[in-house]
Image: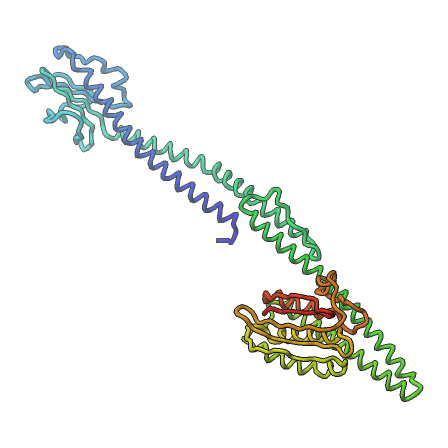
Length: 434
C-alpha cells in the first residue's frame, strides 16, 4: 500500500462504509425475510377464513377467480365435511391431498415440493389453505436482489463523495506545503493559521516557533560573521602595516620594536580565533564532545597558574582566598573557558598595583566561583551589554569583546547562574553558581 494519507483514508473509509452497508443489507434482508413470511402466513390465514361460512352443498367455490387465486399467488384451497370427505378443492390435484391431522401453520411435502399450509376446523368443516413455499422464497429473492442492486447503484456515488471529502479535508496540508515551498531559506516566514483546521494548529504553531528560532539563529550567525570579519580585519591590516615597517626599518631599535608589535598583533589574532572557536563550540549543543565528571577546582588551579605571568607583567596582585573541592558533569574545555575569560578580563581591566582575588566555595546547592578586582568597574547600564558579542567597556584594552559572550553561552547551556556586583570602593565582582 502506498504511504499516502489520502489513499489510506479513502481505503479505510470505503472499507468501513462498505462493511456497514453490507451489514445493513444483511440485517434488512433477514428482517424483510421474517416480515415476508409473517405477511404470507397472514395472507394464507385470510384465504382460509373466507370459507368458514360458505354453503358446502354449493359445488362452486366463490372468489376462486378473484385476486386471491391468481397465478402469481398460487394459492390452493381444500374443504372437508364432518365425514372427512373432500367437498371442494381448488388449485391442487386431489390425489396429492390427505386430511391434515393438525391445525394452524405448518410445512408439508406435496409432489416433492414444500408447501405452506394453514388449517382451521369448525363444527361442520375443516378448511386447509396452501401455497407453494417457492412463492415466498421467490419474493424474498426479489427483495434481496433489489437491495443488492441499490447497494451497487450507490457505490460509485459513495466512492466519489468519500474521495471528494478526503481530498477537500487534506487540502490545508497542501496549502501548508505551498507556503513552505515559497519560503526563502534566508527568511523563514511564519505559516498562516487563518484557514488551518483545528487538528493541524499544534503542528503549524510548532513549525512557526521553529522558524522563529531559525530566523533568530540565522540573524545571529550573519551578525556574528560580519562582526568577526570586522574584528579580524583590523589586526590583519595592522599586521600588514607592521610588515611594511619591518621592511623599511632604518635601525636595529626600530626593527626590534616593529617585531615586538608584530608579535603582539599575532597574539591578538590567535586569541580572537581561539575565542571564536570556543564560542562556536559552546553554541553547538549537539557536538560530539560528551560531558564528563570534572574537578572544577583542579581546572581553576591550572588556569590561575597559566595567568600568573600575565598578572606579574601587568603588576596586578593575583591571589586565592579560598579553594574547595567541587565536581560537576560538564565539558572541561568549557569550564576552562569560563575561568580563563573571567580571570583574563579581571587582570586586563585592573590598573597597575591593583588586586584580583579569587575564591571557590561550596554549599548545599552550588559551587560558587567568585572573582573580584579593583579595576575600572562596570556601570549599571553596561551590565547587560557586556554579554553581547564584541562589546567592550573600554577601547583602551586589547580584548576582543567575546569573553563574556562565551561565558554567557556556556552558562545558558548548563543552567548556571551569573551574578555581577560592584566592588567597593572600585572594581567589579563576578559570581558563578555551578
